[in-house]
Length: 122
Ligand code: FES
Image (cartoon, rainbow, N blue to C red):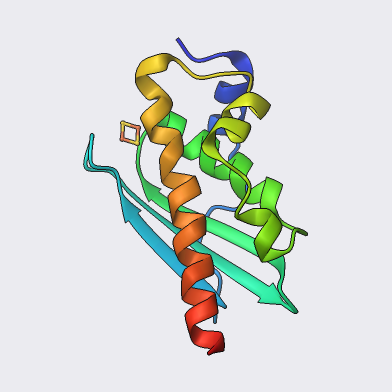
């Protein structure tokens, strides 16, 4: 059902956990399954220097969050906002259609964490 690269990331996810004194935190729930995702970011001069995630979610949510947090590290916040769940799924080589909704969690949590960071800047 999952391809080998999704399984590999699911078995060895990166960036699991929580950043101490984060610059921004985003928590979102998935309306279709009730699962939850939290992403915390460390941002310096508008560049994401670290990203971590915690989730109560399935293998697809874990694999896409691990991949998304890897993809945004080193990007500016504006660039990170352009990382869509579709791009993350492409990097993973695809997800079963009924699991695509799980990949939205990471995208939304990143957006919320950046909103949180920006609201603290004001
Ligand atoms: Fe809920 Fe995948 S089934 S995140």
